[in-house]
Amino acid sequence: ARVSEAKGFMMDGGRVRVGRSRVVGVKAPRRRVARSVGGRTEAAGGLAPLPARGRALPRGRTVVLRGAGRDSGSGGSGSAERTSSDSPSSSSAALKLAALASGAGALETAYLTASKLFSSAVFCPTNGCETILTSKYSEIYGIPVSLFGFLTYAGVSYLSWVAASEGGRRYRDGVLGGATVLASVSAFLGYVLFTQFPGEECAWCLTSVGLSFSTFALALWATAEGDPVKTTLPPVVISPLVVSALVLAFGADGTSLASEEDDFELPYKEPLVTTQSTSEAVLLVKKLNRVGAKMYGAFWCSHCFDQKQEFGKEAMKDFPYVECFPTGWRKGAKEAKACEDAEVRGFPTWVIRGEKIEGDQTLQVLEETADKYLKASDYL
Image (cartoon, rainbow, N blue to C red):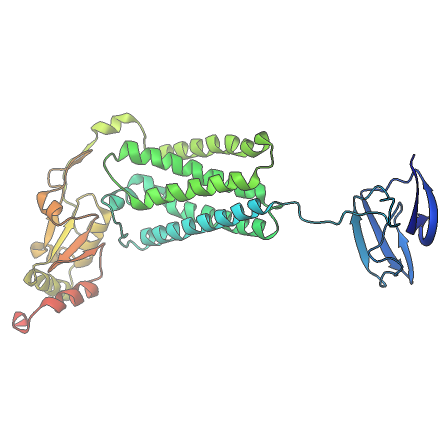
């Protein structure tokens, strides 16, 4: 036991008294609370230096002190370690960056989901977006894969921002777990992209891969605490489970990743339009022909078929349609020359007097576009 003398506040039977005292074997607990009760300052036990020497605490106020354990031996009052955040600023910065990266991913997948649900064309700076985003790998049980991506991205972004605001102490496991799911799904879909769609480029797909892996790397950085086992255990456990679930989901949905698909061929078969044409639709076809409009599509494209259904079967007689795969589809098959010359990047694509409109359109939009290029004499 250590013997020391100190001027100041000392504990005596649970109460604070002032003066010079001789303390033998005093060891302060980790957390001590000094409280003002009825005008008399009391403490929970042990040596409890107060924030201001010679001053009583305000009534009802509690001061939490940590750590001190020993007198300083000089100046009289004992030292105390104040509570503070132990989270490094780098962890908070990593969490904020993860929130921004996953937030960008949420915006991207929200756009893709809306385009999928409303059957609208997706803007794509590369050739192949429409083919991949409308393929059998874009849905699981009829639900867009991008919708699952949006929910996961949004959840990780929210948890990352909240964790950063609170110093990174909470929600770390949720951030790392969600980021692991994003990276695992992106790795799987990246494998599908390069093995099932060789030669196709999908800017949206590659962007999502980059955002998900960036989020994962930032989550690892933010949650690293010097214990590699603790940091890497969630990814090691979660990632195989996610990939296995995707393989089972696509397999149950009739989608195969087997290499035998390399020899798969889809013979050309013109889809049968069954709806009745309105008089407006028939007149619109005549207008479109006058301005030299063309709709480029593929026989297997559902959006192309929906566009034809909107015009109706009577309008198909003079419908300005160009089939881009007239001999059928097989892996590596090239588009018809007319489609290559028109630089078609997705189906359907309308070209009206050089103006390119991607995706299926309403009759009103097509009529307004055709009217811009019609001369007065063309109406006669």
